[in-house]
Image 1 (cartoon, helix red, strand yellow):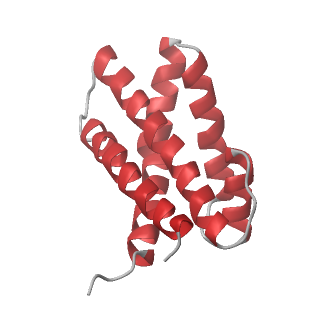
Image 2 (tube, one colour):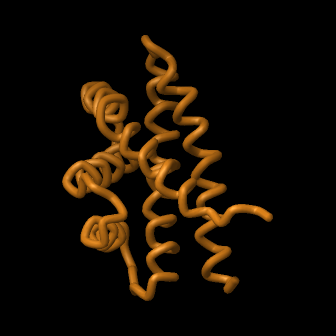
Length: 136
């Protein structure tokens, strides 16, 4: 096993920790403004780790990836992820929320996280669980 093989597995472990925080925040049915901000922050962290996980995994597959957009496009083209447009929307919303705060935007992004982005990340978690080598 090479260092690159181990790198994506380490990144997956980091992703799982951030995704666990997002799961806890999504479980709150009627968040207040502070809880909503936390949910969005946990989404930003989980999303950041998700594209880096895609990058690290695809690097092992022989691809050279430099950006989140490239990681998503190549993962879609390779069949690693299925909903390329939704992933690009998630990237745009992550960029939007990371650079500005507006309550109306926060409410819209919260709904997108709950309805679309959280399920994308849940699917990604399942995909990479299946790719982990079984321990002997």
